[in-house]
Image (cartoon, rainbow, N blue to C red; front, side):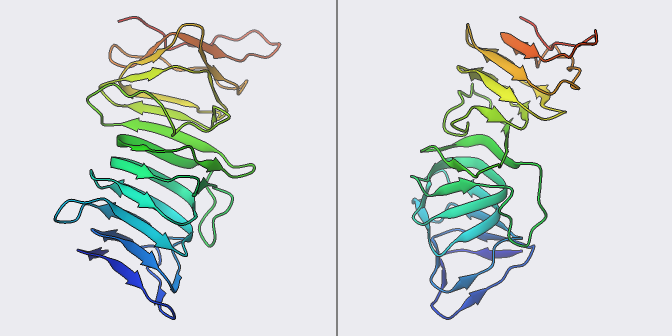
Length: 238
């Protein structure tokens, strides 16, 4: 992997081709030339001294992006992410410039969805979900309660939801999960607001069991067909 302790600038006429490698930038990233990021993992970390950094220039498709700067990262140009976005630390100020689209992949392998992981970071604004694209949400590693915000798409339709965060998740809206394996509960309670529901829309999905440390506390619906079946609801109240 490539680690840049400072700004990374691709000048006009220059080419940056990391392939499928990962690279870390502890500073600003600016592309004024040609950068081929369709296969790589790009991680924005905190420089010394600690300041907000930026991503700018011609960006195009980025396969994987990690935001890991407690001071924040500012997106100044349009970017499309095809595989994963991880909000590890700090606010990602994306304005209207961020698109998630697993169908617009460049040279990378097409996945069922873009995976958006929220840890101790956050998105400042809603993003655009590409036409026909899907997004899965992972809540991971936060000791404090997470209240979903701009990581949810405007449609509130997800491919899948995974919860592995001891502080739990407080869901204040209806969401629909479309995958045949839509829900993974590892650690943390998902509290669904009164009158709201998590809907698993795949008829073939039979449900999953909760545990003493991870379950749904609130409304949940599993869709069934005409044939009587037994389905498992991971519900509880402690």
